Length: 138
Image (cartoon, rainbow, N blue to C red):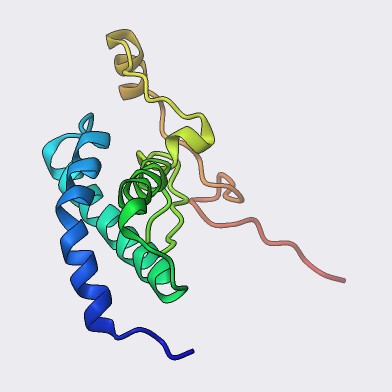
């Protein structure tokens, strides 16, 4: 069995592209404009990967176009990108659901308390003018 020609895959994908964009935009409608544009492009990249795989396996992909786009959108909404990057920053919007982190604004009272905290002493420094205490070995 010989592999399909890439131009046939590209033509089929280009025919399916408007429907995939429509599904992605609808499923990502809750995002702001900038994040939505990035997320839609990420969905389309995942759609290309899945479309190509199915086509190469000999499947009729046209009836599956909407489901491909839906599953790609779910993948992006969960933070799983096409390139497989994993975010370990707890405060990033992708990692917040994973680590159950919520940002809560400080009250004005807490802000003033934090402003007037005394400076911390570095570890290992004594009162000898900022030099570490020396010990003698015998």
